[in-house]
Length: 366
Image (cartoon, one colour):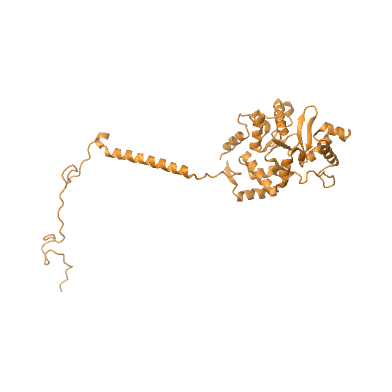
């Protein structure tokens, strides 16, 4: 595989080849085929598809999240993305910040939850010195659990007017990073609506709790490589290092390599990981048909060769007959008579003392 082959395969997989997604059916099929997608491109680039790139059908002059407000394409893509969230065809995670959504397909979300989410999601979080949750985050979770789905504006009013929006955003980010809550809707007047995840997607949460870390990580690695086609192991560890320890990523990669589910390939002099290509299954019927076809073709070739050899050379090529060697009769004449063979015929070796029979070596006379 060359570097250009890899780019072409990714553009086709990520819908950057001039085939944009414009309907909810196309958007659902796209997110299921890639498994993960960023809403906007990042700097530096991450080997991940972008939802706005698939919506536009190109990666030319795509806005990042800082400039999305000035691009009308971003508003249309966000509306389509929110429709995916409403029908639970995709889920949103706070992996690269609130302003750049990380979308996870419904089929891959239980594996993602097994690595990031809480094993007891209904238990309220506690604040403390070692807790990742602030007191405001604990109060916000209690409010969402009682009144969700609820908008951020109504949360501010319920928690007290003294709570600022930046402080509330920070508290919601703490809950969202551990998949305690999720955004379920959005409108321009009230903004985002939040709900506890175990109530919004109970089946996905229940399935994620039952999965082990090794099983979930192996599934996500395979899904990521299916979308990225081929990546270097360092890129793989950098991406998954955002939500799981890199040592566990290396262990999962080594296990998949040992099971031959992953393999290395050379791309422009770089060693990259890919999903091991499927082997061609032996089909006896196809093999028999190919063998019969080969025999039939060889029989026709032999028949044509016999016909060419049977035809006169002079008539086909116009060449003169081959001259016969001197002293030999022509092949078209009478056959040559064979002479009789006598082993000890008289006179064949001269007249000797034994009547023509061969004698031994002569003895030297004294």
